[in-house]
Image (cartoon, rainbow, N blue to C red; front, side, top):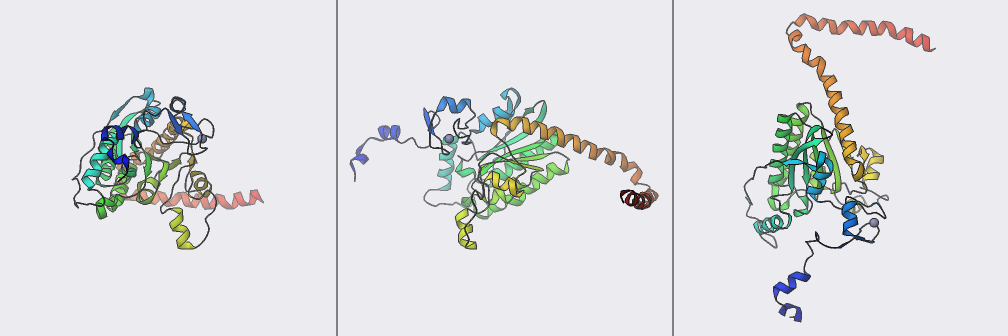
Length: 325
Ligand SMILES: [Zn+2]
């Protein structure tokens, strides 16, 4: 037994503040290793002023950044049954939940809020990596469904800021069932003709990448974010090949077409605003003829007209080809 074990717990806690970095004066940048004054980092939206590395950002701060005047309404999320498997590893799952709830002030990993982006109503979901690695359990599935229903009811786009290590192992197969459940939630939004946008933040991996995080009409990513299913070491061991430089990083995936656009945090609100405007306009135009057809659809004879335009197209085509020659 070392002399350290004799120190009263109250004093020990002062030095043992690994989790609570909220009131630290300095933060070390994981990108360049430089020490940054916390106040400067806060002013720069948690982006390193020297190397542009995007550090983790608190959910409240993220919501304030994207919503007009930093104002939003937090959505109340359903609470599923806690620990149905009575799971225990080194700690009881219930204890782990309690500890994470205390640490983050959240009930589970996902939060949902409603607010406006340049005047357009939006439902936004934020996954907090600090809550058990942003893992996907039943609570997250419930949250996704609730947020999707809310988006449909309010005719608002749904935006998800993903950050996760994957499925929550403490819930076994029940966590894996959230993959189809969240996919159905996304489908609800899409069927209502509303945009669904994903912002992949560092890191987004496992079952989350394999479900709702890759289903966006548009998939955005923050610079340098690690995005993948299995980790690079597992892949290297499986395929017995060295992986290319920057593999599973946002920029690499953008180059390969897995990610549509890498967006800096400072440009996020503007990009989202532009996307929402374009997508809503596009859908309105696409929906317009559908809205007028139901009455006509009742008369079966009308289907004939669909064949006619084809003929006119075939007539004009040879002319066009000749003109081109
Ligand atoms: Zn840096």
